[in-house]
Image (cartoon, rainbow, N blue to C red; front, side, top):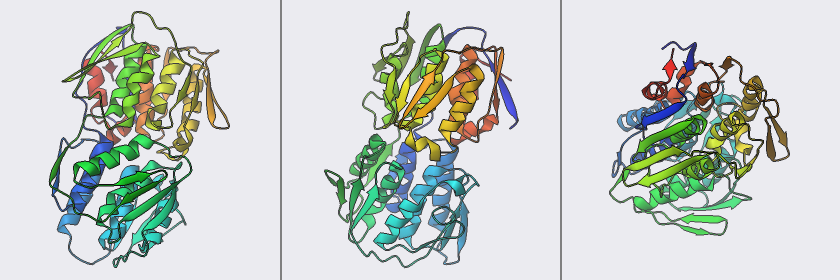
Amino acid sequence: MSSGSLVLSKTNPDTFGAIHLTGSKSECNRALILNALSKGIVEINNISSAEDTQTLFHILEIQKLNTGSQLQTIDIGPAGTAMRFLTAYFAVTGKEIVLTGTERMKQRPIGLLVDALRDLGAKIDYTEKEGYPPLQFYNGFRQQKKHIRLQGDVSSQYITALLLIAPTLPLGLELEIVGELTSRPYVEMTLSMLKETGISYQWNGQTLVIEPQFFQPATLIVEPDWSAASYWYAIAALSENAEITLPYLKKNSLQGDSAIAEIMEHFGVSTEFAEDGIKLVKKATTTFTQNFFDLKDCPDLAQTVVVCAAALGLNATFTGLETLKIKETDRVKALQDELAKIGVQFTETTKNYHLDCSNLHFPDKVSVKTYEDHRMAMAFAPLALCVKQVEIEEPNVVGKSYPSFWEDLKKVGFEVK
């Protein structure tokens, strides 16, 4: 497949089939850090094929073999989660490292995490712009304090990065979360996985406490990715009839993005849970029962839900989207620009974002820019059920989290050129 663009179409408005999703990127990236910190005592089953996870996997594998003291430069490309998790990992593991990434990665702030690690005693310098990657790490970590404070409404990945290293810190960690906590389910996922590896913790009010302790032998079984499942919910919602089976997804999932099941009930898609996975079923009639959605706990669903609501002509309001502006791209601006191509306005008022679908129209062809963002490509792909042709620019961006996405669309009747 060329990296230029692809064209999607679907002549049959119905969608039926079974799709096997790769392992959760969120779970897997946490598991890889726990595997490395535990020196292999914590094992992993069902490693994700997502490029971000594979990047992190290979970096950590190389580090296991590297016992030298020579300065290394590690380029993590566009892998944002890897940047945050490795920042904490390298801060305390005593290696001379320069950690860098793409030009977009160099525009994504990391100062709050670096400040917290410096408070703990880490030696970290910025090699270019203050507050942003690249970062240089030095050996000789000596913990200076146990209690640190971190803003809660910027990125839950900063909090997770600190929690993952906490058991290995000589003094342990008291992490006080300042203000409102964004993406709380992701923090709860981290704590649950730590518990599976024998690590105990206390969460009292705004403070998380993890004492120094040893990992216990464990095998972390990675569930399929609910973020990837969200695109299939959108496809079901925009189909006239749909039954889509997604094996091995769990009703009581660690992943905050499992909230998509409840959200899509409002868009006419029901979820049937079974021991071996889930089935998405398009209801005979769609009655919108809600037009306000708080995505604070699941911001990675925002593009999927916003585009689906727009395509259905639902004038809706969204909140909890503050972190979207510092993701792979400014996702709010990207949504505004691309939705305008079907006549939909997406406007911001303080912390609320409003969809105005009064001028919604579907031209014969829509060309969608992806802005080097995997979720833009996959969130807009279901529009092929409304438009004769959807052109996706730079389609290979899906490799970041869901490499087989275009092949999976073919399995249920999409034509992919």
